[in-house]
Amino acid sequence: MHIPDIIIAIDGYSSTGKSSFAKIVANEFSFLYLDSGALYRGVTLHAIEKGFIDDGCRIDVDGLEESLKGLDLHFGPEGTYIGERCIEDEIRSLKIAEKVSPIATVPQVREYVDRKLREFGKAKRVVMDGRDIGTTVFPDAELKIFMTADPVIRAQRRAAEMNAKGMEADLESVLRNLQERDYIDSHRSTSPLSKAEDAIVLDNSHMTMEDQMIWLKKIIEERFCK
Ligand code: DC
Image (cartoon, rainbow, N blue to C red; front, side):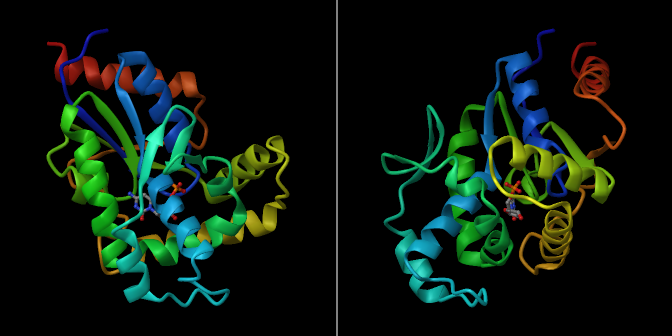
């Protein structure tokens, strides 16, 4: 199926399978996949390592803002990088997950990430996933999808994914972290997680990846291939 040069924005709650879906969609249509959450996770790793966030999640906003000027966060062959250092595995840990939502509430962090995303997205033929892609980063994206799923199913998927990578993850703490992140992400004052008016909802609680692709192809065919 050939589709025109468009931006596909995939937003939704944590662990709804946005990135797995977005990667497969990008692959199917030869689009570039961009994981916006990875940039927030990268800034969080940076903030922890440089001491701009403490264990109580208190943030030195001024120090963090200043340090972002020299932070070379980008995507490369193995995922996310700071300079030449690949941080892809480190940013997927629970340690980062616990602090990323507070970091993502900082407006200066959001400006930093938005600037990078808009630069990367210039080329069109991009699938980008996150929380505010269809509302803030690319409000004119031609196709917007909002993903959701039952929280317990999401926690089960996330715990299985972490266990498969050899990371410790008990279902209860994963579920708690997920619900906390949903709350912070949806209630922050800058670019909260919300469905864009023109986004199409995909509840994949009981859908396989194949089901989701069939669903998407039907929409694309109706919208862009007539
Ligand atoms: O998609 P993810 O779980 O990797 O995202 C990590 C965090 O980053 C998530 O808790 C909220 C934040 N985020 C955001 O605020 N806006 C985005 N566009 C993407 C992620």
